[in-house]
Image (tube, rainbow over all chains, first blue to last red; front, side):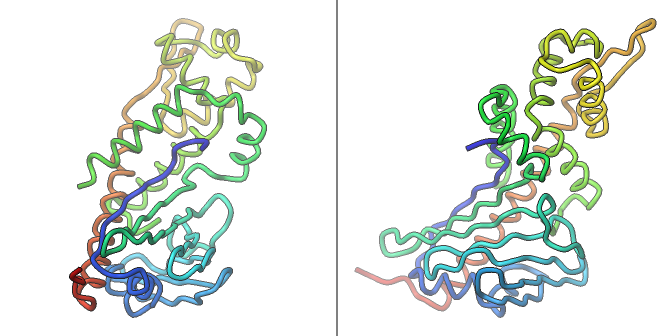
Length: 149
Length: 120
C-alpha cells in the first residue's frame, strides 16, 4: 500500500449477508442509515448514485463494483454539487463476510490523496516514498480510529 | 465526502493537506525540515535531490496547506514545520471515521430489526 490515506471501520451484524446487501444498496434503506439523505441508485458498475440533502445539497457518486452479497463500492465527490472526477472523489468499499451466525460489515474510504498529479508522482517515486511521512499518515489514521468512538 | 461535521472550510483545508502530503518530495522536504528545526530554501536544496527553485515551489504548496511557516532572519527566509494543521487533519479524519461508525451502527440496527438473530 502506498500512502495510508484511508478510513477503515467494521461492525458485526446478526443478519445474513443477503439481508445486509439489501440494507446497503436499496435507496429506501440507505435513506434510513444515511441520515438526512434521499438516495437514488442505479445499481450497476458505472451507474449513477445521488445522495440529496437539504443541508448539504447533492452529493454525486458513481457505482464501481456490484458483487452481491459480498462487495459494493462507489466513488463519491468530496464536495456537494460537484461531479465525480479524478482527484475530487474518494472510494467507499463495503465488504460483507460471513462470521459465525452473522456478517462482518467492513467499510473502507480511501483516496484522500489521489489526485492526477499524485498518481503520476506515486508511479514515478514508488520506491522513493519517504518512510517518515508514511508513518505520520499512519499515525493520523490510528488517531482517527482511536478518537472516533 | 460530506456530511462534514466541522464545515466545508475544514474539508477544504484537509484537502490541501492531503494534496501537499501526497507528493514524495514534499514529504521528504518536511522530514528534512523537521529534523533541522529551521532552514532556508537554499539549505534545504543541499539535502534534497532537487533544485532550489523546486524547493521554493514545494515550500509554497506546504505553506498554503499550513504545514510550514516562513520567517525573515536577516536576509534569509527560514522555514519551520507547523504541527497544528496535521493535528487538525487528524481530527477531521477522526470526524469522518465517527460518521462511518454512526452509519454502521444504523446499518446494524436496520438489518437486525428485520432479521432476528438465528439460534444454532
